Image (cartoon, rainbow, N blue to C red):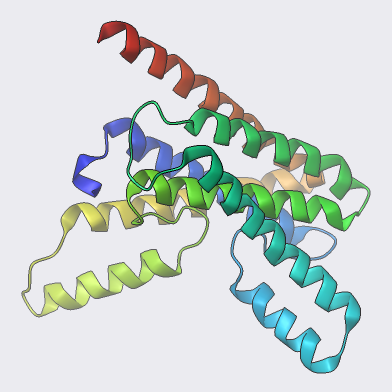
Length: 222
């Protein structure tokens, strides 16, 4: 599937990884120091809460997990397929992600947990959307799989076995996007605090509009 992705999808993958990197930094630097774009740590914290009987942690981390899953459900409902296809409602998914991030800002500024849940839902929506259009080969909101794939490729290269070069490029693309987003998010957070989320919210809104224009132009040309 990766060989069939158009050039703009590669660019979009980098930009979405940038968005995720920014969002996650805001969560980590915020009042709860909460990772937002992936669930491994949150699941472990939920396990600790269940083991210790800490009701506050149980409800909070269950809320993070539930919000992320809700985002994936929304993506599946909106896009409805696992194969990339021009014409599917990626623009709607992107504008919904943007709206969730915009809504999260005032909530986070008031130190309300609902802001984290909105951001987590946005990340679940994004991660499921990129998985859908790429045929389950791209995860734009976390890097464990990408770094693992790079390690496997390096091991194969050392054994002089064939390596999927395009897969390696995609992994490097996602990692660099997430890292750059994290850097920009950390710098911006010093002055903007939770308002830093306006950056990824604006980017996803612009991507939605851009995709809509691209789709219309392709339709009129065909």
